[in-house]
Length: 163
Image (cartoon, rainbow, N blue to C red; front, side):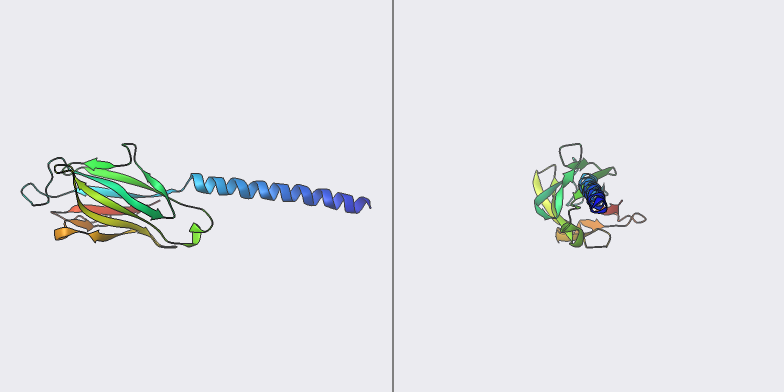
C-alpha cells in the first residue's frame, strides 16, 4: 500500500512539473516570436516618375495569416528618404497550429509626397523556409526584392532578414 501511495505522489509531482514546463515554453514561444525584418532602401533617383522627395512609408495592410503584428517604434511604419534604410519588424505566431503553417502579411507602400498608395507586396514565410517578398501591385516594377549582397539601382529595394 505504501508503494502505491508513494508512486501516486511521484506521478502527481512529475505531471505538475511537466505541465509547468510546457506552459512556460508556450509563453516564451509566443513572447519571443519577432523573427524577421523587412529592410527598405530607397534608390529611386530624382526625376524618376516614382521618385518621392519625402520618401515612402510601409504599412501593414489587411489581416495576416498566423501574424501577431508588425512592429516599429515609429507607430508601426517605416519612413525613409533617399539612400537611407528603413526597417519593419515582423512578429509572427509561434502557436502550435501556426508552427506547421505558412505565415504571411500584406503591406502597402505609401508615397509620402502624394499620400497615396504606390504599390503593395506580401511578406511570406512558408513552413520551414526563409521569408521572401511577393509583389502584388508593382507598377513599373519600381519595387525590387534584393538579397543582402545585391542592390538594384533606380528601385525601392526590399529585402528580408530572418533571425
